[in-house]
Structures are given as structure tokens and as C-alpha cells.
Amino acid sequence: MRPYLLADGGNVMVSEIEGPNVFLQLQGACGTCPSSAMTMKMGLERGLKEKIPEILNVIQVPSEGGEVLTTDAVEAVLEEVRPFLQMAGGTIELKSLTMTGLAPTAMLLMVGEGAALTSVKVEIQQRLKRKLPALVNVMWE
Image 1 (cartoon, rainbow, N blue to C red):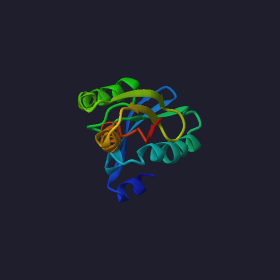
Image 2 (cartoon, rainbow, N blue to C red):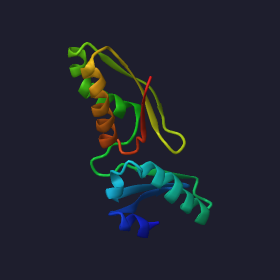
Image 3 (cartoon, rainbow, N blue to C red):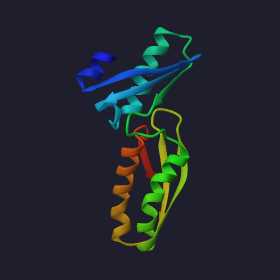
């Protein structure tokens, strides 16, 4: 896999091995790529498990500038935009965070009306993906 990552301006580093768990960090362009979760699951995890069956989990460590994908991390990003939404008469809520499978997904609920609230959805999606590179999908109820 490394030659493919290098060709795209990225790399991968083993951050830690803890029993059957391998912690990898995608670097360079791969660390902030929207497809990083797919690269991790379908490329690196599958390849490592095929070659070394004793590996049970391959876990993505956030790249520099990225945070670990957790409910608290998503809430922290949403907290940054809540004051603006309140001024525009709206609210936002994290309904669920699904981290299983190939595409970690945050389901959000935004309540309120107006063009300002509609246009802020794009900013929220971009901000979440920029700060939490492992987040693949942001969906709205």
C-alpha cells in the first residue's frame, strides 16, 4: 500500500502495536483526505489482516491537526457554530454518531428557518470533516 500512498502525496506510519491492535497514522495528503477512512479500512486494514491473521483491529490515529472521532469531538465542533445559529433563530443537535463500517457518519438535526441556516449546513459539514478527518458522512434529519 505504501507506494500508492506515496504516489498521492501521503504515507502511513505505525503509531503503536498493542496486542492484536495496530494503530496507524495516515500522513501528508492522506491524513486530511476525505477518503482516509476508506483507505484505512479497505486498503490498510484488509491488507494487514490478510498478511498477519493475528491482527484483530487496525485503528486510525488522527493526523496532525486532526482529532479522534468521538461524540465529544463532534459536539465541540458544533459548539463553535451554536452561537451563530442561536442568533439566526436555529439550533443544531447531534442525533447519532455511527463509527462502524466503512463510512463513519454523524446524523445531525438543525431546527429553524431561513437562508442563513440552510447555507450554514455546508460550513458545518466542512468544519467537521476538516477537524475530524475520520468522519466520512454528515447527514441531516
